[in-house]
Image (cartoon, rainbow, N blue to C red; front, side, top):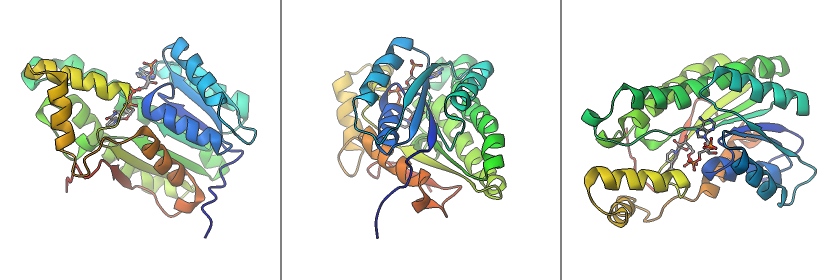
Amino acid sequence: MSLDLQLSGKTAIVTGGSAGIGLAIAKALYTEGVNVVIAARNQEKLETAVADIQSLPTSGAKVISVSADITQAESIEKVVSTTLEQFGQIDILINNAGSARAGSFLELGDDAFLDAWNLKLLGYIRLVRAVVPHQKNRRDGRIVNIIGGAGRTPRPSFLPGGTTNAALLNFTRGISKELAQYNIRINAISPGLTATERAESLALQNAQIRGVSVEEIKAESLKAIPLGKVVKPEEIAALALFLVSDLASSITGGEIIVDGGSTPGV
Ligand SMILES: NC(=O)c1ccc[n+]([C@@H]2O[C@H](COP(=O)([O-])OP(=O)(O)OC[C@H]3O[C@@H](n4cnc5c(N)ncnc54)[C@H](OP(=O)(O)O)[C@@H]3O)[C@@H](O)[C@H]2O)c1
């Protein structure tokens, strides 16, 4: 059996595609011949990412960037309309832009929760709402939500992120049945600790909360991973490629955990 993903010629939106997991997924799609639209806020980082992606081999794919703040409804519209103007179709949506503050519960105000819910929970929901009418007409759609282990295995110091992720799991499973009738598949990948800029800043925040060094936090985190290693963004990207390909044509409403065994959950 061949593992030819047959993704060449398709078009994908990757939110948060200028760094970390999003950038790794954008690169993987591009090298498979997929036209990629990366969306994030910082224009300079976007330009660097586009150049980085364009340096990779591809079979005729293009990559463009859209400067967009996913917390703003009008930005979502801009990402979708630019993609349709440039490429005429949206086969794949990778919902990935997310960021939540760590902190002890009594020190976090409503804003920490509202910021996390607004960016990641509502951002993902709004993008699904925006691309589905188009995918429904074409009777084909492949959506991957990058969620995170704290949805099922919550931690007291990460409740804004954990509650966001739990709600997104509910959304992913909840909407999958309705989308299936239009041949639109939606799945979740829940990474554990993954080597990105965000993981670095969370380690710093946790060190400050606990009054210990960043090195101690990192050593503790590593010890809690049964396979003994931090996930590489490329591992998440490889799974995303599989999930958006026809090799996964019977998989929808699922959550696949990539965390070295650290969040058993239930
Ligand atoms: N890394 C981990 O250990 C880990 C574990 C579990 C789950 N996750 C999840 O995986 C996803 C990606 O995480 P990561 O570690 O790759 O993060 P990252 O390295 O911090 O990258 C985040 C990306 O999102 C963009 N972004 C942030 N806020 C945005 C906004 N308001 N509008 C548009 N784009 C925005 C950033 O660009 P700009 O700042 O320029 O906008 C950047 O491109 C997140 O949803 C995160 O919760 C990560």
